[in-house]
Length: 232
Image (cartoon, rainbow, N blue to C red; front, side):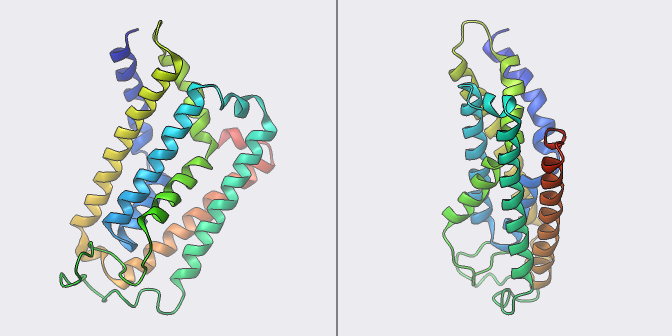
């Protein structure tokens, strides 16, 4: 197997997993609706930074600890579940807080708001780095990403190619595919700005995403506590 062949075969595995609806897509769409395109891209870059970190860890064998140690895997899984529960709970709490969406008109966002992307909340002034950290932390606390790499990367290692280098190439390839998909979602949200820029849709988006995260956290936590973590 040559390097181009390995990358092509890996793409055939990674593409369906990338476009499958999941936590990453939900977070990016929610950010695009509530905080705008700039923060959505920051969240997407954070997610991809986490993917790259897991890819490097798998390439050097660090994630072998997760595969070998049930305790380590369960501990990281529970930490991820707790983080998702906190994130979902915070979204729900914020959606009921008075004044949370007052900066948004109950309709399309006026073009007079200088520099504001469609769907942005001008009242929520925060650095895009916080959105980046949100995406990265969410991904890094998901051991399934590490286990995915640990299971797949060894299958795509051509003879004579350093494992670390090939692992990095595959992780970067996965990043490019993931960023392309998330960018498509962000721009799709922008095209639907007439429906996605009012107070009501922003509030509903926070509530729906919060409930989804809480449900996912509950499922992950329960499976980890009952010894079914690897079956999630």
